[in-house]
Amino acid sequence: MHHQDAQPIVAHQPAAGRVGIVVALGVGALGILGLAASVYVSMSGQPGLGLVMAALALWMFVLFLYVLRDAQGKLGWRIEIGTEAVALVLPSGRSLIHRLSAVDTRIPYDNIEAVETRLEAYRSFGLANMQRSFALRLKDGRLVILGEDRALGTRLASSLLEDTVAKIIERGGMATRDLGMAEGKGGILGVLFTAPPPWSAPSLSNDQQSVLWGRAALTGKIGLVLSLIVGLLAAINSLSN
Image 1 (spheres, one colour):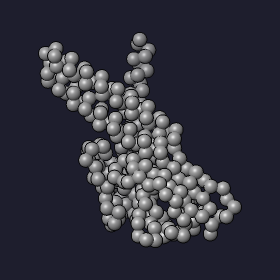
Image 2 (cartoon, helix red, strand yellow; image 1 turned 90 degrees about the vertical axis):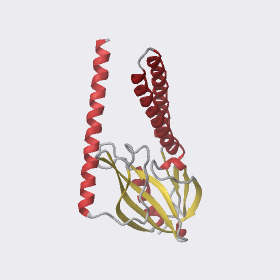
Image 3 (cartoon, one colour; image 1 turned 135 degrees about the vertical axis):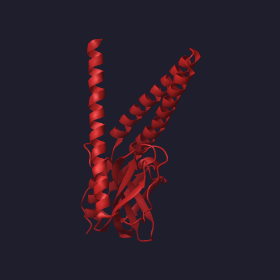
Image 4 (tube, helix red, strand yellow; image 1 turned 30 degrees about the horizontal axis):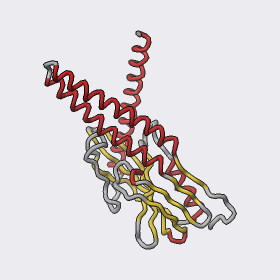
């Protein structure tokens, strides 16, 4: 049932995108400084150490591109939930692992067959990242992936997509399909050499899902501890100066 008199609901995240741009620039600056330092150390007679520092600087540049892509995806992402249709402005970077095309269109609810969702797990070095992807299955068979909620099972978990999709379902009255959990390729720390599972991949067993949830929770705890250590070291350094 459509809500004829309801006002459009707009979901977007420009603030998160702007913060991401700042973070990306900071990471890029560290990469440049690291590269300059590696050249200096190499010319000072320590080529081995210089090579290690250059490799770390290269990794910083990889992270710069990764964070920048995520920030641009958040900055331009917008969903307007109207009374008869949903208007989508979805940048190509709305997913960190799926390689998607940008979408700028308006889809009447009558053209949507169902909302599909699934959990996606990505393992790397014994840890795991858990996210939930959401998509619109159109009546002509096309699939429009809206994006994903990330870091599930941790204190950093997001729920913007889940909340937005719930409002789409409420206004559009379409069916929902939970496809379970699938596992993709986590590559190197979820940044390089990653690949999502096919959308048609069968759901993992309950035992497999439990293992992956456990690893996702462990990943979140390790990230929290590392953040506390970095903050403590920064505070100690500030007091010592």
